[in-house]
Length: 110
Image (tube, rainbow, N blue to C red; front, top):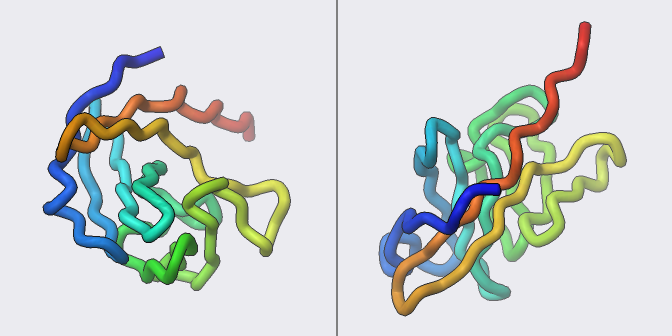
């Protein structure tokens, strides 16, 4: 498992917004909600849309490509029980946002 890594300062992501970063070669979206700061892969599991370019309303991010929504706290979507966001652990160190990457999801054999 990876170690926590600094990604951004809190003031770089105002409340109610999100921003994409590259961490260890992975595109990560960081979401700043009223409930806290959350992180997930920036790729929608439905068709690969860039989540940080979508809309964030409360704890729900909506993918800009096909309008699928996901709860950034849990990664779950009401559309499909089979698809969810790959979420990453977030820790705050003063005004710095630290992320510990989750393992990469397994590629499905086709």
